[in-house]
Image (cartoon, rainbow, N blue to C red):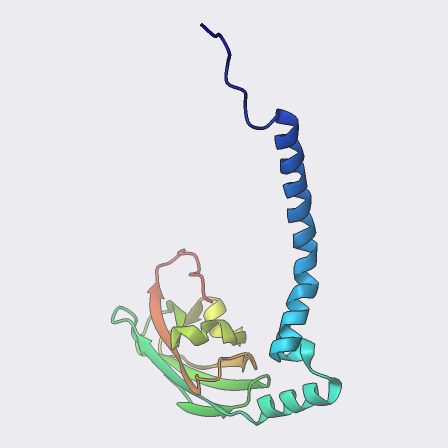
Length: 191
């Protein structure tokens, strides 16, 4: 009878060396990815880092000029909750804008009641994909509005549309819904 035990195929030292070599190789490959990506992009003719990063100064100004030639139609809409005795509407219902430029439009609100009433506008942008590209610089929606009985006010909205607005969006609608606020109720968050 033999009491021989089976021998393992590889020693623990060999496994440790292989694992260490694998870790060093992965670390080196991580550093090599950046130049490899650059090489792949130049061979394939792909611009890396976006248009602005890859463009030369003359090309960059051409890209900016093309963006400033783009015209976006912005439509304005306003509704009032039935609990709020106000009339509310945009002065202009439609405006053609160039991305990157600042514009100002006005909305009119009138309190039809004889009592002082507070309301707040909640904005919405459609299509929703354009929401992050529409910036309100000054807006009546940032705070509550209080109108005395019979009072009528004109409220400004200053905004800009980002030049990064996706090319397939040529029109967007900014809608406001005015809600009645109870006495002492905090302001609602407006985007």
